Length: 215
DNA sequence: TCAATGATTGAG
DNA sequence: TCAATCATTGAG
Image (cartoon, rainbow, N blue to C red; front, side, top):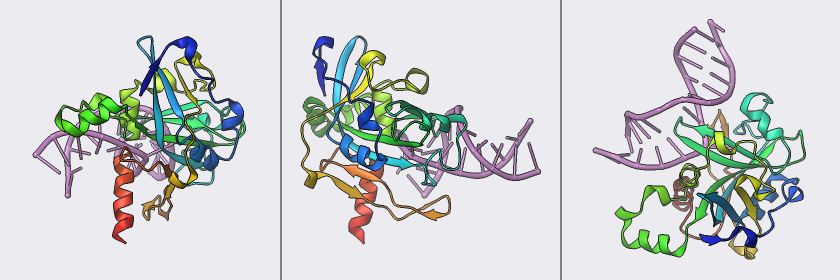
């Protein structure tokens, strides 16, 4: 996490970045910075875990649907898609693919700044839940990302207080694609995780990793 | 109109 | 292991 004045903000990733194959966008977002304006102050986090959702995926909200909340997945690439899950948590996605083609990348985990990470390691019980960003629901809560506030907003401009920028280069070898064997909607589906090698991945992905190692 | 479901998380 | 908690979906 980092703070910066408005005039020093880096250029947001543009429409062309999102107007591509969803899985490529998911991989390329790893290591990028997520910028959020809270209380007039800009902060940034590094993206360490993403998940791609494509139109042909039964787990995708737009699978055989184009109305309701799924309509947002067909929006202009670079649009924020925020939905509520389990009645308690919001999840942030970046819409991908050309206009009228469904696709989105779920942001699953962000790397906290060094102070927060160190504090969490030394005093786990003092690690405020409000600061945790390892998990899609957690990061949305920590960054005040809600459906009402962010759904449908353009991520290609700092105007709405939320955007992504290029980050330090990430060696391809550090990008990991994980899979999970599980049942979703009656089908065996792969997970679509692309993550950096670090401990700040989501609970779900840690489970997937341990299950994989157990095989 | 209504019951079932889930891209999650935290408590016990 | 399981409850919290509700928008969305699909069946009736």
